[in-house]
Length: 422
Image 1 (spheres, rainbow, N blue to C red):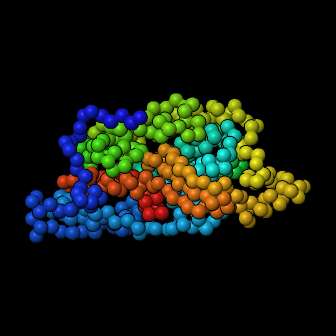
Image 2: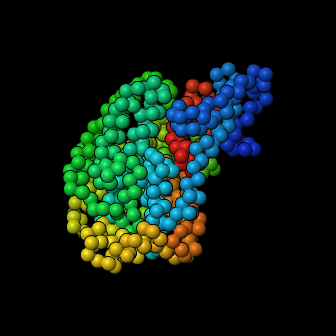
Image 3: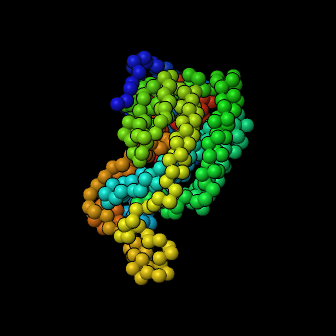
Protein backbone atom coordinates (compact mmCIF):
# COMPACT_ATOMS: atom_id res chain seq x y z
CA UNK A 1 0.00 0.00 0.00
CA UNK A 2 1.33 3.42 -0.93
CA UNK A 3 2.11 5.71 1.98
CA UNK A 4 0.98 9.30 1.37
CA UNK A 5 2.63 11.89 3.64
CA UNK A 6 0.43 13.93 5.94
CA UNK A 7 2.36 17.16 5.35
CA UNK A 8 1.41 19.21 2.31
CA UNK A 9 3.93 20.85 -0.03
CA UNK A 10 1.27 23.40 -0.96
CA UNK A 11 -2.39 23.79 -0.11
CA UNK A 12 -5.05 22.49 -2.46
CA UNK A 13 -4.17 21.57 -6.01
CA UNK A 14 -2.20 23.22 -8.79
CA UNK A 15 -3.50 20.98 -11.56
CA UNK A 16 -4.80 23.30 -14.31
CA UNK A 17 -8.50 23.35 -15.14
CA UNK A 18 -10.40 22.47 -17.26
CA UNK A 19 -7.60 20.56 -19.05
CA UNK A 20 -5.03 19.23 -16.56
CA UNK A 21 -2.22 19.13 -19.14
CA UNK A 22 -2.59 22.71 -20.43
CA UNK A 23 -1.73 25.76 -18.34
CA UNK A 24 -3.79 28.64 -19.65
CA UNK A 25 -2.91 32.29 -19.08
CA UNK A 26 -4.90 33.75 -16.19
CA UNK A 27 -6.13 37.24 -17.24
CA UNK A 28 -6.52 38.24 -13.60
CA UNK A 29 -2.77 37.80 -13.00
CA UNK A 30 -1.29 38.75 -16.38
CA UNK A 31 -1.88 41.52 -18.90
CA UNK A 32 -2.68 39.64 -22.10
CA UNK A 33 -1.04 42.37 -24.20
CA UNK A 34 2.29 41.60 -22.50
CA UNK A 35 2.17 37.86 -23.26
CA UNK A 36 4.74 36.51 -25.71
CA UNK A 37 4.11 33.01 -27.11
CA UNK A 38 7.29 31.05 -27.84
CA UNK A 39 7.93 27.60 -29.28
CA UNK A 40 10.40 25.45 -27.36
CA UNK A 41 11.18 22.61 -29.77
CA UNK A 42 10.49 20.26 -31.29
CA UNK A 43 14.22 19.75 -31.60
CA UNK A 44 16.46 17.02 -30.31
CA UNK A 45 18.23 16.84 -27.89
CA UNK A 46 17.52 20.18 -26.23
CA UNK A 47 13.94 19.19 -25.32
CA UNK A 48 14.86 15.59 -24.45
CA UNK A 49 13.64 14.36 -27.81
CA UNK A 50 11.27 15.93 -30.27
CA UNK A 51 9.01 17.53 -27.66
CA UNK A 52 7.26 20.78 -28.47
CA UNK A 53 6.38 23.19 -25.68
CA UNK A 54 4.15 26.16 -26.52
CA UNK A 55 5.05 28.60 -23.78
CA UNK A 56 3.28 31.86 -22.93
CA UNK A 57 5.74 34.24 -21.29
CA UNK A 58 5.08 37.33 -19.21
CA UNK A 59 8.58 38.74 -19.16
CA UNK A 60 10.67 35.80 -17.96
CA UNK A 61 7.83 34.17 -16.05
CA UNK A 62 5.88 31.24 -17.49
CA UNK A 63 2.21 32.23 -17.65
CA UNK A 64 0.91 29.41 -19.83
CA UNK A 65 2.15 26.13 -21.28
CA UNK A 66 1.04 23.31 -23.55
CA UNK A 67 3.13 20.21 -24.23
CA UNK A 68 2.56 18.95 -27.78
CA UNK A 69 3.56 15.35 -28.52
CA UNK A 70 3.38 13.06 -31.52
CA UNK A 71 6.46 14.14 -33.48
CA UNK A 72 8.13 10.76 -32.89
CA UNK A 73 5.13 8.50 -33.49
CA UNK A 74 6.45 5.23 -34.87
CA UNK A 75 3.42 2.94 -34.77
CA UNK A 76 5.38 0.27 -32.89
CA UNK A 77 2.31 -1.17 -31.18
CA UNK A 78 0.38 -1.57 -34.44
CA UNK A 79 3.47 -3.02 -36.15
CA UNK A 80 3.75 -5.61 -33.38
CA UNK A 81 0.21 -6.76 -34.12
CA UNK A 82 1.38 -7.66 -37.65
CA UNK A 83 4.36 -9.69 -36.39
CA UNK A 84 4.56 -13.04 -34.65
CA UNK A 85 5.30 -13.01 -30.94
CA UNK A 86 8.81 -14.30 -31.65
CA UNK A 87 9.59 -11.51 -34.12
CA UNK A 88 7.84 -8.83 -32.07
CA UNK A 89 10.39 -8.98 -29.23
CA UNK A 90 12.69 -6.60 -31.13
CA UNK A 91 10.13 -3.77 -31.08
CA UNK A 92 9.51 -2.90 -27.37
CA UNK A 93 13.17 -2.16 -26.61
CA UNK A 94 13.14 0.51 -29.32
CA UNK A 95 10.14 2.28 -27.76
CA UNK A 96 12.05 3.52 -24.72
CA UNK A 97 15.57 3.36 -26.05
CA UNK A 98 17.14 4.21 -22.67
CA UNK A 99 15.39 1.48 -20.67
CA UNK A 100 15.33 -1.09 -23.46
CA UNK A 101 15.64 -4.09 -21.13
CA UNK A 102 12.59 -3.00 -19.12
CA UNK A 103 10.40 -2.78 -22.23
CA UNK A 104 11.67 -6.08 -23.57
CA UNK A 105 11.07 -7.71 -20.18
CA UNK A 106 7.47 -6.58 -19.74
CA UNK A 107 6.48 -7.85 -23.22
CA UNK A 108 8.14 -11.22 -22.65
CA UNK A 109 6.51 -11.55 -19.21
CA UNK A 110 3.07 -10.86 -20.74
CA UNK A 111 3.57 -13.61 -23.34
CA UNK A 112 4.79 -16.04 -20.68
CA UNK A 113 1.74 -15.26 -18.55
CA UNK A 114 -0.59 -16.14 -21.43
CA UNK A 115 1.38 -19.32 -22.09
CA UNK A 116 1.55 -20.19 -18.36
CA UNK A 117 5.23 -20.87 -19.07
CA UNK A 118 7.64 -21.25 -16.16
CA UNK A 119 11.07 -19.64 -16.53
CA UNK A 120 14.23 -21.27 -15.11
CA UNK A 121 15.65 -19.72 -11.96
CA UNK A 122 18.89 -18.75 -13.68
CA UNK A 123 17.00 -16.74 -16.32
CA UNK A 124 14.92 -14.99 -13.64
CA UNK A 125 17.99 -13.78 -11.74
CA UNK A 126 19.84 -12.75 -14.90
CA UNK A 127 16.80 -10.76 -16.00
CA UNK A 128 16.85 -8.90 -12.70
CA UNK A 129 20.60 -8.32 -12.97
CA UNK A 130 20.38 -6.80 -16.45
CA UNK A 131 17.23 -4.84 -15.60
CA UNK A 132 19.00 -3.13 -12.71
CA UNK A 133 22.07 -2.45 -14.82
CA UNK A 134 19.69 -0.89 -17.33
CA UNK A 135 18.17 1.25 -14.55
CA UNK A 136 21.65 2.55 -13.72
CA UNK A 137 22.29 3.17 -17.43
CA UNK A 138 19.08 5.16 -17.84
CA UNK A 139 19.64 7.27 -14.73
CA UNK A 140 23.22 8.00 -15.81
CA UNK A 141 21.99 9.37 -19.13
CA UNK A 142 19.40 11.45 -17.26
CA UNK A 143 21.97 12.76 -14.77
CA UNK A 144 24.56 13.66 -17.40
CA UNK A 145 22.16 15.43 -19.75
CA UNK A 146 20.18 17.22 -17.02
CA UNK A 147 23.35 18.51 -15.37
CA UNK A 148 24.66 19.61 -18.76
CA UNK A 149 21.52 21.68 -19.36
CA UNK A 150 22.14 23.54 -16.12
CA UNK A 151 25.79 24.19 -16.95
CA UNK A 152 27.51 21.32 -15.12
CA UNK A 153 29.33 19.96 -18.16
CA UNK A 154 31.78 17.82 -16.13
CA UNK A 155 28.93 15.64 -14.90
CA UNK A 156 28.08 14.69 -18.47
CA UNK A 157 31.52 13.18 -19.04
CA UNK A 158 31.65 11.40 -15.69
CA UNK A 159 28.15 9.92 -16.07
CA UNK A 160 28.83 8.71 -19.59
CA UNK A 161 32.08 7.11 -18.42
CA UNK A 162 30.13 4.80 -16.10
CA UNK A 163 27.39 4.38 -18.70
CA UNK A 164 30.00 3.00 -21.09
CA UNK A 165 30.99 0.44 -18.48
CA UNK A 166 27.37 -0.77 -18.33
CA UNK A 167 27.14 -0.94 -22.10
CA UNK A 168 30.35 -3.00 -22.15
CA UNK A 169 28.58 -5.53 -19.92
CA UNK A 170 25.55 -5.65 -22.24
CA UNK A 171 27.85 -6.14 -25.22
CA UNK A 172 29.67 -8.98 -23.49
CA UNK A 173 26.44 -10.83 -22.72
CA UNK A 174 24.34 -10.12 -25.80
CA UNK A 175 26.68 -8.99 -28.56
CA UNK A 176 24.92 -5.61 -28.73
CA UNK A 177 25.34 -2.53 -26.58
CA UNK A 178 21.66 -1.54 -26.84
CA UNK A 179 18.47 -3.21 -28.15
CA UNK A 180 19.82 -6.59 -27.14
CA UNK A 181 16.92 -9.03 -27.72
CA UNK A 182 18.47 -11.10 -24.97
CA UNK A 183 15.24 -11.79 -23.06
CA UNK A 184 13.36 -14.55 -24.89
CA UNK A 185 10.04 -16.21 -24.19
CA UNK A 186 10.97 -18.88 -21.67
CA UNK A 187 14.28 -17.40 -20.55
CA UNK A 188 17.42 -16.01 -22.21
CA UNK A 189 18.79 -16.12 -25.75
CA UNK A 190 22.15 -17.58 -24.67
CA UNK A 191 23.90 -18.74 -21.54
CA UNK A 192 25.85 -16.19 -19.50
CA UNK A 193 29.35 -15.91 -21.04
CA UNK A 194 32.60 -16.60 -19.26
CA UNK A 195 34.09 -13.46 -17.76
CA UNK A 196 30.77 -11.69 -17.14
CA UNK A 197 30.73 -12.28 -13.40
CA UNK A 198 34.23 -10.91 -12.91
CA UNK A 199 33.66 -7.82 -15.06
CA UNK A 200 30.27 -7.12 -13.50
CA UNK A 201 31.74 -7.57 -10.02
CA UNK A 202 34.38 -5.00 -10.90
CA UNK A 203 31.63 -2.55 -11.90
CA UNK A 204 29.71 -3.20 -8.67
CA UNK A 205 32.81 -2.36 -6.66
CA UNK A 206 33.50 0.79 -8.72
CA UNK A 207 30.02 2.32 -8.88
CA UNK A 208 29.53 3.38 -5.22
CA UNK A 209 32.72 5.45 -5.37
CA UNK A 210 31.55 7.05 -8.62
CA UNK A 211 28.23 7.97 -6.98
CA UNK A 212 30.09 9.57 -4.07
CA UNK A 213 32.02 11.64 -6.61
CA UNK A 214 28.78 12.76 -8.29
CA UNK A 215 27.38 13.89 -4.94
CA UNK A 216 30.58 15.74 -4.12
CA UNK A 217 30.37 17.59 -7.43
CA UNK A 218 26.70 18.57 -7.23
CA UNK A 219 25.47 18.58 -3.63
CA UNK A 220 27.89 21.33 -2.60
CA UNK A 221 27.49 23.33 -5.79
CA UNK A 222 25.59 26.54 -5.00
CA UNK A 223 24.39 26.98 -8.59
CA UNK A 224 23.07 23.41 -8.80
CA UNK A 225 21.23 23.76 -5.50
CA UNK A 226 19.71 27.11 -6.48
CA UNK A 227 18.56 25.73 -9.83
CA UNK A 228 16.92 22.60 -8.35
CA UNK A 229 15.67 23.21 -4.79
CA UNK A 230 12.09 24.44 -4.57
CA UNK A 231 11.70 24.33 -8.36
CA UNK A 232 8.98 22.40 -10.20
CA UNK A 233 7.08 21.44 -7.08
CA UNK A 234 4.50 18.64 -7.30
CA UNK A 235 2.52 17.56 -4.23
CA UNK A 236 1.73 13.95 -3.36
CA UNK A 237 -2.01 14.44 -3.98
CA UNK A 238 -1.41 16.04 -7.37
CA UNK A 239 1.12 13.36 -8.32
CA UNK A 240 -1.41 10.63 -7.53
CA UNK A 241 -4.20 12.48 -9.34
CA UNK A 242 -2.00 12.79 -12.44
CA UNK A 243 -1.10 9.09 -12.39
CA UNK A 244 2.60 9.59 -11.70
CA UNK A 245 4.83 6.63 -10.91
CA UNK A 246 8.51 5.95 -10.40
CA UNK A 247 10.98 8.63 -9.25
CA UNK A 248 8.53 11.49 -9.91
CA UNK A 249 5.97 9.94 -7.54
CA UNK A 250 8.50 8.94 -4.87
CA UNK A 251 10.07 12.41 -4.90
CA UNK A 252 6.65 13.77 -3.93
CA UNK A 253 6.60 11.61 -0.81
CA UNK A 254 4.57 8.60 -2.00
CA UNK A 255 6.20 5.32 -0.99
CA UNK A 256 5.35 3.04 -3.92
CA UNK A 257 7.58 0.72 -5.95
CA UNK A 258 6.27 -2.27 -7.92
CA UNK A 259 9.45 -4.26 -7.25
CA UNK A 260 8.57 -4.29 -3.54
CA UNK A 261 4.80 -3.76 -3.43
CA UNK A 262 3.79 -6.06 -6.33
CA UNK A 263 6.94 -8.16 -6.83
CA UNK A 264 7.69 -9.68 -10.22
CA UNK A 265 10.55 -12.05 -11.07
CA UNK A 266 12.26 -12.70 -7.68
CA UNK A 267 12.41 -9.14 -6.34
CA UNK A 268 10.64 -10.32 -3.20
CA UNK A 269 13.82 -12.22 -2.25
CA UNK A 270 16.09 -9.18 -2.53
CA UNK A 271 17.20 -6.75 0.13
CA UNK A 272 16.91 -3.17 -1.12
CA UNK A 273 15.59 0.19 0.03
CA UNK A 274 13.04 2.30 -1.85
CA UNK A 275 14.21 5.95 -1.72
CA UNK A 276 11.44 8.45 -0.94
CA UNK A 277 11.70 12.23 -0.52
CA UNK A 278 9.02 14.67 0.53
CA UNK A 279 9.56 18.03 -1.20
CA UNK A 280 8.45 17.09 -4.71
CA UNK A 281 10.92 19.41 -6.45
CA UNK A 282 13.64 18.97 -9.07
CA UNK A 283 16.25 18.38 -6.35
CA UNK A 284 14.31 15.54 -4.74
CA UNK A 285 13.79 13.85 -8.12
CA UNK A 286 17.55 14.03 -8.55
CA UNK A 287 18.12 12.53 -5.09
CA UNK A 288 15.68 9.67 -5.72
CA UNK A 289 17.51 8.70 -8.90
CA UNK A 290 20.90 8.97 -7.24
CA UNK A 291 19.77 6.71 -4.40
CA UNK A 292 18.17 4.30 -6.87
CA UNK A 293 21.49 3.87 -8.66
CA UNK A 294 23.09 2.95 -5.35
CA UNK A 295 20.32 0.48 -4.52
CA UNK A 296 20.43 -1.00 -8.03
CA UNK A 297 24.14 -1.62 -7.54
CA UNK A 298 23.32 -3.54 -4.36
CA UNK A 299 20.68 -5.56 -6.24
CA UNK A 300 23.15 -6.43 -9.02
CA UNK A 301 25.58 -7.62 -6.34
CA UNK A 302 22.93 -9.91 -4.84
CA UNK A 303 22.00 -11.23 -8.30
CA UNK A 304 25.64 -12.04 -9.02
CA UNK A 305 25.94 -14.00 -5.79
CA UNK A 306 22.91 -16.10 -6.70
CA UNK A 307 23.91 -16.55 -10.36
CA UNK A 308 27.38 -17.76 -9.42
CA UNK A 309 25.68 -20.60 -7.54
CA UNK A 310 23.58 -21.48 -10.60
CA UNK A 311 26.43 -22.26 -13.01
CA UNK A 312 25.47 -25.18 -15.22
CA UNK A 313 21.74 -24.68 -14.66
CA UNK A 314 19.39 -24.19 -17.66
CA UNK A 315 18.88 -20.62 -18.88
CA UNK A 316 15.75 -21.23 -20.95
CA UNK A 317 12.67 -23.45 -20.68
CA UNK A 318 12.69 -26.80 -22.47
CA UNK A 319 9.50 -26.35 -24.50
CA UNK A 320 10.28 -27.03 -28.15
CA UNK A 321 6.94 -25.62 -29.33
CA UNK A 322 7.92 -22.17 -28.03
CA UNK A 323 11.70 -22.15 -27.56
CA UNK A 324 14.28 -22.51 -30.32
CA UNK A 325 16.14 -25.84 -30.06
CA UNK A 326 19.85 -25.78 -29.19
CA UNK A 327 21.94 -24.79 -32.19
CA UNK A 328 24.13 -27.90 -32.02
CA UNK A 329 21.06 -30.11 -32.58
CA UNK A 330 20.20 -28.53 -35.95
CA UNK A 331 22.92 -30.54 -37.74
CA UNK A 332 21.87 -33.90 -36.31
CA UNK A 333 18.12 -33.78 -35.60
CA UNK A 334 15.45 -33.32 -38.28
CA UNK A 335 12.82 -32.64 -35.59
CA UNK A 336 14.89 -29.82 -34.13
CA UNK A 337 15.43 -28.33 -37.57
CA UNK A 338 11.67 -28.42 -38.24
CA UNK A 339 10.85 -26.79 -34.89
CA UNK A 340 13.43 -24.06 -35.53
CA UNK A 341 12.03 -23.40 -39.02
CA UNK A 342 8.40 -23.33 -37.82
CA UNK A 343 9.07 -20.97 -34.89
CA UNK A 344 11.08 -18.51 -36.97
CA UNK A 345 8.81 -18.47 -40.02
CA UNK A 346 5.33 -19.05 -38.53
CA UNK A 347 5.80 -18.34 -34.83
CA UNK A 348 4.19 -20.21 -31.95
CA UNK A 349 0.54 -20.10 -30.94
CA UNK A 350 -0.47 -18.38 -27.72
CA UNK A 351 -3.71 -19.38 -25.95
CA UNK A 352 -6.65 -17.02 -26.28
CA UNK A 353 -6.89 -14.43 -23.51
CA UNK A 354 -5.83 -10.99 -22.33
CA UNK A 355 -3.30 -9.93 -19.70
CA UNK A 356 -1.80 -6.79 -18.24
CA UNK A 357 1.69 -7.05 -16.78
CA UNK A 358 3.49 -4.15 -15.08
CA UNK A 359 7.12 -3.76 -14.02
CA UNK A 360 9.07 -0.95 -12.34
CA UNK A 361 11.09 0.61 -15.16
CA UNK A 362 13.57 3.48 -14.60
CA UNK A 363 10.71 5.89 -15.36
CA UNK A 364 7.99 4.18 -13.34
CA UNK A 365 5.23 1.70 -14.10
CA UNK A 366 5.91 0.14 -17.47
CA UNK A 367 2.85 -1.88 -18.42
CA UNK A 368 2.01 -4.18 -21.32
CA UNK A 369 -1.59 -5.00 -22.25
CA UNK A 370 -1.67 -8.04 -24.53
CA UNK A 371 -4.66 -9.74 -26.19
CA UNK A 372 -4.38 -13.08 -27.97
CA UNK A 373 -6.95 -14.73 -30.26
CA UNK A 374 -5.11 -18.03 -30.07
CA UNK A 375 -2.86 -17.48 -33.08
CA UNK A 376 0.83 -16.71 -33.60
CA UNK A 377 0.28 -12.93 -33.68
CA UNK A 378 -1.19 -10.70 -30.94
CA UNK A 379 -4.59 -9.20 -31.63
CA UNK A 380 -3.78 -6.12 -29.53
CA UNK A 381 -0.60 -4.73 -28.00
CA UNK A 382 -0.56 -1.60 -25.88
CA UNK A 383 2.10 -0.23 -23.57
CA UNK A 384 1.50 1.92 -20.51
CA UNK A 385 4.27 4.44 -21.12
CA UNK A 386 5.50 6.22 -17.95
CA UNK A 387 7.07 8.98 -20.07
CA UNK A 388 3.67 9.93 -21.48
CA UNK A 389 2.20 10.11 -17.98
CA UNK A 390 5.16 12.12 -16.67
CA UNK A 391 4.64 14.81 -19.31
CA UNK A 392 1.07 15.23 -18.05
CA UNK A 393 2.58 16.82 -14.92
CA UNK A 394 4.47 19.49 -16.88
CA UNK A 395 1.71 22.11 -16.72
CA UNK A 396 1.32 21.60 -12.96
CA UNK A 397 5.06 21.77 -12.20
CA UNK A 398 5.72 25.01 -14.13
CA UNK A 399 3.15 27.00 -12.15
CA UNK A 400 4.56 30.56 -11.87
CA UNK A 401 8.16 29.58 -12.62
CA UNK A 402 10.84 31.37 -14.61
CA UNK A 403 11.60 30.35 -18.17
CA UNK A 404 15.11 29.26 -17.12
CA UNK A 405 13.55 26.87 -14.60
CA UNK A 406 11.41 25.31 -17.33
CA UNK A 407 14.48 23.50 -18.68
CA UNK A 408 15.29 21.98 -15.28
CA UNK A 409 11.67 20.97 -14.65
CA UNK A 410 11.10 19.23 -17.98
CA UNK A 411 14.42 17.43 -17.59
CA UNK A 412 13.55 16.26 -14.08
CA UNK A 413 10.42 14.47 -15.35
CA UNK A 414 12.74 12.29 -17.48
CA UNK A 415 10.40 11.68 -20.42
CA UNK A 416 11.73 9.77 -23.42
CA UNK A 417 9.81 10.83 -26.51
CA UNK A 418 10.02 7.43 -28.18
CA UNK A 419 8.23 6.06 -25.13
CA UNK A 420 5.75 8.95 -25.12
CA UNK A 421 4.73 8.78 -28.77
CA UNK A 422 5.32 5.10 -29.59
